[in-house]
Image (cartoon, rainbow, N blue to C red; front, side, top):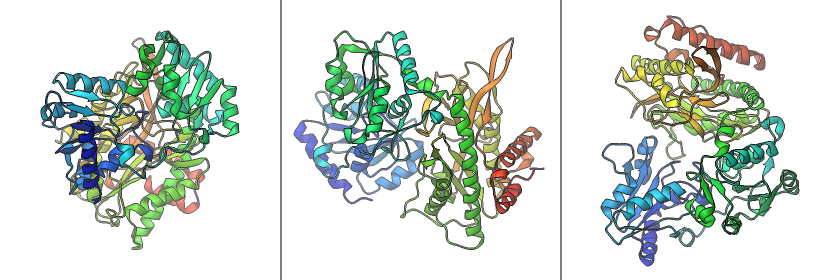
Amino acid sequence: MNQEIPARIADLRNSMRNAGVNAVIFPQTDPHQGEYIADHWQVRRWFSGFTGSAGALVVTVDKAFVWADSRYWLQAAAQLEGTGIGVMEEGKPDVPSIENWLCSELGKGDTVGIDGMVFSVCATEELDSQLSSKGISLNTNFNPTESLWKDRPDIPLDKIFIHEEKYAGESCSSKIKKILADANTQGADSAFISDLAEVAWTLNIRCRDVESNPVATAFLYLSPSHSTLFIEPQKLSDEVVAYLASNSVATAPYSDVKSFLSALPYNEKILINTVQTAGAIADAMGNRIVRGSSPVAMLKGCKNEIQIQGVRNAMERDGVALVKSFMEIEKAISEGTSISETDIADILTKHRSAQPLYFDQSFDTIAGFGPHGAIVHYSATPETSVNITADNLLLIDSGANYLDGTTDITRTITLGKTTPQQRKDFTLVMKGHIALAEAIFPEGTRGAQLDVLARINLWKEGLSYLHGTGHGVGHFLNVHEGPQSIRLNENPTPLKPGMITSDEPGVYRAGEYGIRCENLILTVPAMHTEFGQFYKFEVLTLFPFDLNLFDTSIMSDSEISWVNNYHETVRNRLLPLLSDSEQKWLREKTEPLTR
């Protein structure tokens, strides 16, 4: 536990009293409403010590809680122990929402403070509506962070670079034209983009501002007459400025964005996505805003042929790196060499970084041995890392960003003996994984309509998992992206050709082990009949599943054939790229599965 946390909360409460604020909310996001954020905006983490990638901190004059979803219940409890901050296990039936909790804790005339730059338009309006119904005021200009966080990191100043069209598959000017055309159909003259990945995709630029996400901290205003990128000037090279100018995009300081927007012609109509745009930004636009959907989301989500081929190529190189990595892990265990969870990440990075076009990992590696594998988003630290042995399961979830594609793969392996329960659990997870991978579905199908395929075999045994089954994956961009998803929650976006989504069911037995099996899948045309267009999935990931964990007695013949066919594809694609010893290892790992 960070001994400074109680003191920070005490200082925060003093600031609250001085400002007449009775409660404050710190979300885990930034002015771009991002999931992954730069250190400058890790405000919730600084005040609480909780490091999860989601969840909000709420502090009143005498209470404090972090709202954490099921991925982080165990992690939050451990990290918040002794701080005076409790955990609200979001998603449980008896756990109130933040808004409902505040309405029950506060009274008429009280005030809730937030920083309007880190709350979206939708979130701000929803919060204000619920609070005002109880006579509670909302102060959107309460930001004590600057005065309390004395050594707060600066906004990132890394240089941006151009993502070449030979990888992106489409020019910046072509993308801008499409975006403005879409904005026009939604009744707008121009468009404002806050989302960092959408800015990067639109302009074909990349950077290192957010760990494992190759994005640049910037806002983008697009107009037929004059477009502007709002970014710290130190991040720009002469080459990049010239490139942007050639695409009719000017630059302005990052901090000028609100004054620029407020000075635009009063009759201009600016398209914004109210989920992605900060409330304080929208306030600067005033009556100019047109509420609509992001034109970028679907364009970015449906990869073009150059991007798709790039991902296929990246998967081969990633597969080679994985073979080398897993061979090294197995060798260490067999020789009795000490190897820890944190060592796993180093091994993967070593072999991936040796591959052509490697840029960075696509997220922090999750290497959970035994009970740690049951913590869905476990992140090993020097304090928590344990040594890997042969007496339990090892779950490894990792990925990389290459200039031509992004990878994300999870494998659960055994390095010794297995139990009947482990094999049954693993096979039930794989039955769901296979069912989703083999799905054929009509045009217009949404992810929520397919999600049950991955879960039904677990449900029949009284088992389940609480995370989504599939998330969209960017192209040399964020490993988590929309607009599509495969999960129980309804998402109106249909699965379309060119979308890359994960297929990752799992099961987690607290205190014992976790199992997750993940490949990336590409939506492609399957057939066209008198009933319309049908789609299916192409499996992109290239690495074997652990044959020692299958219980073929509960598998159908078609499921066994799927595993064997997949492993044959892995062999055919990877063997020519491997050394003799690596080929031998892969052949052993992909031997035909039999009853």
